[in-house]
Image (tube, rainbow, N blue to C red):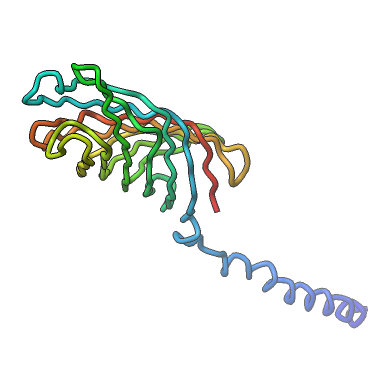
Length: 212
């Protein structure tokens, strides 16, 4: 009788011993999430409105300008989300020419282009909604034909300034890769062009963001 029990138990014991490594292997070799795996590159674009202003005191009073103008603008860029909180973006912004009317009624048309880089800091509010702040630097370029600064009548005028910027934005995920995006950016004024002072440059836009 004992031989029958032994012959019956030995195969069961052997099967149990073979099964032990199979159950213990996932515990000892559990994968560790890589930081690099959380890095996500993305592209974005926002269409909206850019608001700019200028003050110019001319020797001839009629040519002095103190005006602001809003025009349709487009902001395109690329970014990298480093982790759940921190990211970085580069962007370019441009749009329709701004028109500033002088005291004598003459229209001064200026193209405004902006190139910038900024850090982003934010987090998810819900499974789909994310809010973030932005801080960085922007290179603002004004160019056109104007009756101010070093430009004589009919000649080209150009001014380039490096300025600080702050802003905030949000994304609302439509799919795992595609999201709606809203942007609000404030580029601070820097009055350093002799008699011409450019004001704050503000942008408000709505667009899309695609993550890879």
